[in-house]
View 1: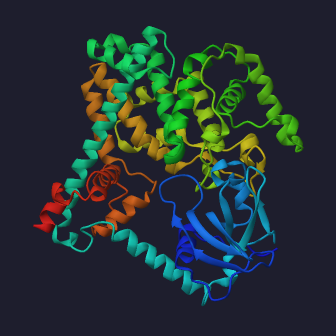
View 2: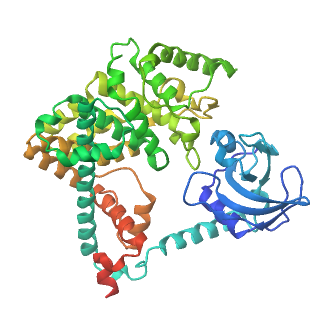
View 3: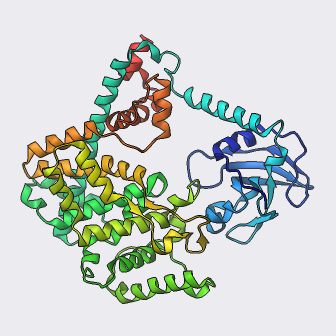
Length: 493
């Protein structure tokens, strides 16, 4: 077997798009292959990497989608084989055919030919990939209108503006959290479950004045925290369905079973069964998988009669363009362990207490990271999906990078709203200070690109600036609102 060499797929997209091939292409099983149209890159949604390609294989011209992966085995490990969005794929393009297989199969059983592009790339591998990297970088930076002239504004001016945007973004997160909290109050009083008809809730909102007593039920805060944690674990592609999962399998349902001798196993059982991701243990030949899935099924049988919420299907979840450690199965496993801490260790109220006690950003940062980082264990330490063993053990269900995102986007704003509602303005001001001082370890490609384009050096570690640059790009750069932006106003006038 060849030694596997992983290349970032975005660079393989450029090689495919520009057709940098020195030889006549052929599929892995020897059929001549001609690219009439490589297709349009899919930049918007989950699914195949290129849409509407036209490819001649042998004597037949096919029209459809193209999926590009590093390795032949990625087709299955990324879940394409059961995702109906890949049913129109006509060619599986890979960098390296490590297993020397000629085909992959769609969900409906159609056979798709494979081409290993690595052996057809013109010139040396290093030169071709360097060209792809440079071209991709230039295109990325040139998307920012002031890339060439941003140097006209001095660094302090730009940083001060970005900090203001970061503070404004934080306030909007707090407003969103308060809105959801009020919604939970009304749902709780009306004894309603999600999903609800929104206009009923909106009408109630217009008629209601809230006081701090309305928010005294601990269920409201724990449910809010649970939803926001799961949303954060879903990243961009799965954040909505992760939040819906937390709304459906709510805190109240789990509290009924809080005395279960193995609460974590019960939580996993409920979440995986409701999510629709679980596999039928009767169809599994692997004994380890079968034992685990059977245990989940038995736990679910004991509690499912009490569940009256929504259930989801596997097709609702997105696996495309995700690294296997970020698959929803792994994130649900991590979320289940945080939910156990919320229920049994009263994690949220312990966090609130720590904010009252902590005097420095270092103290609160250490505490939060220690309590939110979740190391892998058990079945999901060795599996990406129920039927996909991990080639190397997974180290973390929730690592440092994701935890820092949760601290910024969930912990700080939830705590700010909590102490503001209950009249502890001094604690709220302290949390605002922590937010301004926090340095996060997570990286964001958009932030890195923007800081480079604006000629700002190493400022993205400061979270308020990180958040400010996200706001800058989304609200101004991407919408060509340059003259509404204070940086654009200065450099273009």
